[in-house]
Image 1 (cartoon, rainbow, N blue to C red):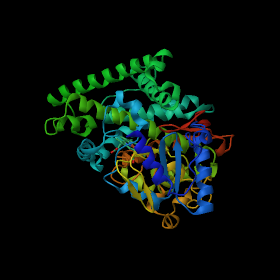
Image 2: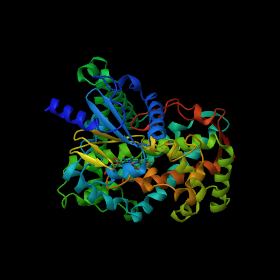
Image 3: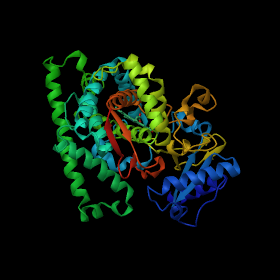
Image 4: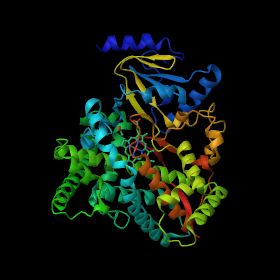
Length: 475
Ligand code: HEM
């Protein structure tokens, strides 16, 4: 089967423009399999190919793995819109012990029924209930920053803890206070699981489990896993009792409450509920904190843009620095909206997602082979110079309506698109706007370094390798 598979992939691959790499190893050496090198090489290769041949499909071989990367909206639309090819690649395998096969990882009928069940939890009436929570934690964030005004500091952990508190309360109804107490076992466990999972996925010598045990990585992972699972299970048990006693106020309903209400109707086990809760904890804070961190960075490097965004916030919210942002206000913050969109263009929090083809698949003019992988890369598309002429420049005007009208809707896909897009998109957009308005009202951010000095790694998220180090000055 394996040999047949590779032959089939080779046969179809030969019909697609592009080279096949070196015999046996393919393109492994060109990319050095390094998450800091790979994105730059890939974008360079893509832009050269598009310029010289006009083709919009990068073809790569990593040993026997055949990877295709559509590079513009018109081509990528085919794979994103299909309801058949929804199986993820193996990128998240390492997180399965933590997340099980919740919404992010599941496929087929399980994914379909979970998606249908979970979609109403992101209805705007539910999101409205989360706005107060987001404002409250954003206020705590800026209050805590007051003491550090005038200092150069890493804003990445600052926004990360804020996002973690928000997702914990909206998902489980539990106040975590990771901003005030970052050393709690659960907070440390979540941080460790994210970083160890990423490390295992990236370092090929850690792929065999015995190597992970030998180097002590697996023991650390298992310890954090036990703490995280225990925490979630305890919260689920407590919440079940609170609901039964009618102690959960209707305006403080968490995502978990809706799952518990569906438990019987959908025949959900405790484990089913736990995996969905953990999936939201996983997907719902690292992504938004990357989005926030990069927006702070882009603004710190572009003082005029930051000032214009600040003036808009003051115009909309007035001089009361402690006024909460409402959903109505959000629609009025057009310039800030463009700034956030543009930072997610240049630094998309999720740089790659994958699909593993279950059948031969016609992707526009390219016939891709069964068992080939498709890499959907917001990072690459957003830097395609045939779509964004000054692709590496931070320019919020890229999202002026007249410029957007010249592009395909799928040329901008930070949240992916189609039936398997990000279910938390609106939640994330609310959160980013709320936290940014609180930050901008109280502080000015400044960087001595130019925007392009940032080193990033394309891991599960686009991680700023050295953090987001900026000077924070009270206004
Ligand atoms: C800026 C923040 C965020 C970004 C950029 C982002 C991006 C993405 C992307 C690219 C995907 C993959 C879609 C695909 O495979 O085609 C995804 C999936 C997902 N996201 Fe987000 N996300 C963000 C925030 C959130 C939040 C806040 C939540 C939950 C509250 C969330 C929950 C999920 C879930 C559960 C999935 C899996 C959906 C499915 O497979 O049906 N995300 N996200």
